[in-house]
Image (cartoon, rainbow, N blue to C red; front, side, top):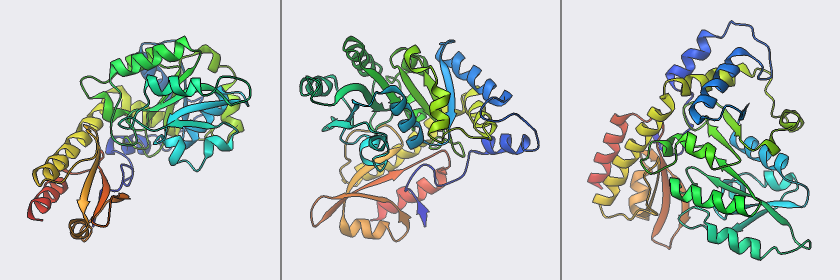
Length: 339
């Protein structure tokens, strides 16, 4: 059975794996102070055009989210997210386990909007309530949508005006970077206080690269990394991967490929009249299927059940990645045509 469950089922992109193998016998210092991490940082700083930014490498997305948020916020402060935000529904209350409430509103096509932030601020007027201090967004969202450059700029302008930090989770960032109206890495760096470049879901064996732009958040961040168990002794393994992904735009090539594979699947479902849930141009496909059709698909393919719509339909998710072969997608498309 071929799996469309997620974008991290396989190991690492061959170029990443080869770089790890080639450097395997080398000896380096630990904890991210090696030459590979330094080279990866230099590439990132050049691409975001922010030479004074700080860059830190971590193993996973949940770890990155809880470390950043717990470092930025005081005990009485919370973080704003959509109800579909990863920190709200997929991280076992990891952020709230650090003592910071996640304050939510219903998503708008998977996204946070300025109006949502305004409403939350109005509902938290004084010291008897958690103080909203950070806004969390993800690019792409949990529902496969993405923030345009204009949307990001609007949110940033509002958060800056209201003294809020803006944090962008980039676990699937490469999928959005290749879209025409989405912000580039340099655009993102101008319009957030902190973000991370995802690796785990974008061709790395594992890893996320946190980029801190706001000077207020830079101080003592490595203490927070160590305190939260997020400082990898073999830090060079992270540096090697991000240097490989970012030095020659392999990262964007991966995003372009996975989006194209997802487009083929979307078009096949549309041609058969099965409704897609929310507009998407990225590597996650959400489709509403009759249960009998889903049963036929699941004889040969693995997909994720999102939610039952009634006794007759199920909303499901299919995800493509760097490793999704075009031949497998073509076989799936032909299978859909024959349903």
